[in-house]
Image (cartoon, rainbow, N blue to C red; front, side):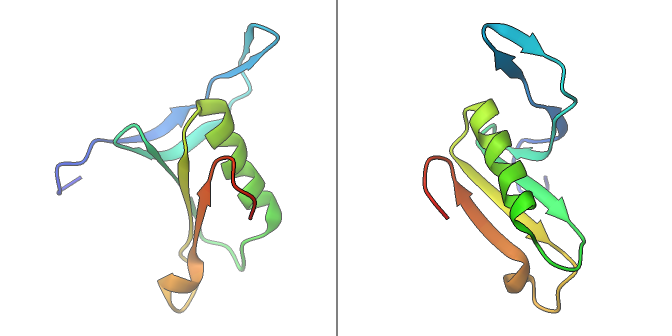
Length: 89
């Protein structure tokens, strides 16, 4: 935020199924510049379910790039995972 970036916190993710908008309670932790989704965790280790959650947020919000960050690591580099919508892991 200090760098002049637009950051939205806890942004609702719209889910549309068969033309109907569903209130599923999905929320993006951080949305940076209306383009980058950041999901923040502080857990023992990242699991596939965490990547799947971010992929769902990317797909439902029609965004391309996401970062999954786990702060419960010795080196932050070990807690970063970049996910691009439409590309396999």
